[in-house]
Length: 74
Image (cartoon, rainbow, N blue to C red):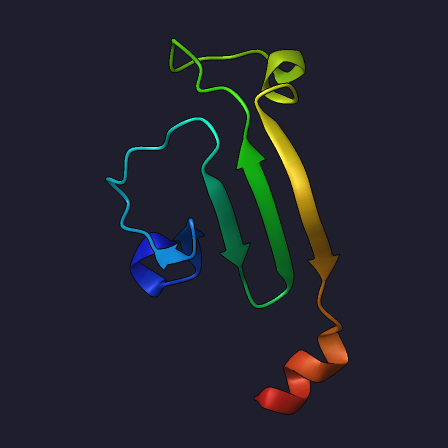
């Protein structure tokens, strides 16, 4: 996703190796969905429980894109 330019960190296109820090704002803009969230906490391990994962970010904005508009673009 990063290589296609759909991921931004703090308003700048991000590469896959980008280090993420607390308070970073991440945007993911795919063909069908847009989500913007703030990193509240970076986990100390790679594996986190589903319950804990919800506490790591704060969703700022989220919207699904209308598939009719997507089809019109094609």
